[in-house]
Amino acid sequence: MRLKVIDNIEAQKIILNEGLDLQKDVWHFTFNEQFNDREYLFDKVNKVVFSKPVNQWAPLLVYSRQQDEVINEQNFVTQVPFNKENKDYRKVFWYLATTNFETFLQRRSESSEQPQKNFPSLQTYSKKRAALDNLRLEVNEFDMNFYSYHFNRLKQAGHMSAEEIFKVTISDVKNLPLIWVKLGCLYHEQELRAIMLLVDDKRAMCYANMATERSKYGYGLWLCTEIVKYCCDNNYKSFDSGISGLYGNFKEKIYLDSREIYKKSSESSLKYVEFWKKKFWQRVYNKVAG
Image 1: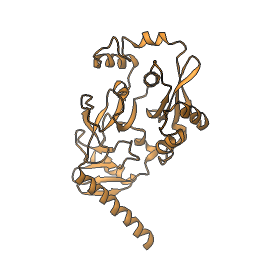
Image 2: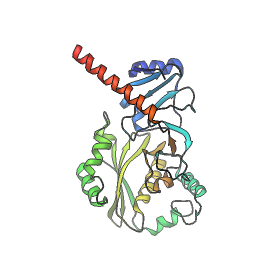
Image 3: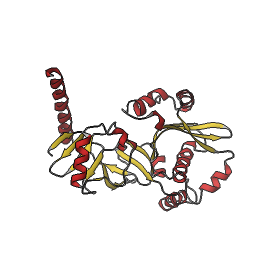
Image 4: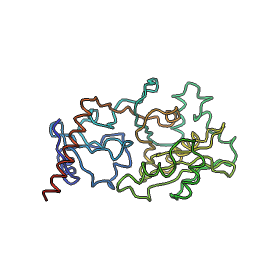
């Protein structure tokens, strides 16, 4: 692959002149124009423009002609649906296209082996919702003190603190507006039972992390379900959780449009590392020489 490093202005010219399209059915807040000062790579042979992910959880931003083309790069989201029968540990892009809530519940019913029993589904949602008095969702502006207090009291022992989570998912993402950061709060019987750190770019919601009270009610799954309803009711296009490994099975119940991620071979990974290492030292040389 012959790669050329280009800036945003040149990238946009190439995208326009070559008639390239954003990879369909994939959106992440890091694709927003807010991050347009990033560097891009241009594959001259295959006419593909892509950009290095802003962190390990973000998908590869890709513009190409062929939507089914495979880009042999880290965090590329393939056309292959997530296979829940495959129990091998791997990375997955957790994604749900949001239309309306009843459609989501119907899809859950169709994918469940026991829709009369399993939650959420068309058969169980209303019944279980009515049984929980005073259950409510609030999507609030971010407040660090509020977040730290509730997240740290609810998180499991040994897990990262609220401050550590915020650093690696929010503050380390260059150009991420703090106004995009929200808190999804689930209350039951007037007490906060689960809290979720969210990024909201008004097109989609991204779930960064969550802490919940451990109980028979499954507050974590309830919070995710209510966020789906919120996204549907407010015309969001999608709800995602970025790229991460297999952890439990609650994400399988929510992110019905999840995709498999291209896995780089050790040889291609080495080439990727060497490319960026060479680019780094070229920058150092230019700085010293200048």
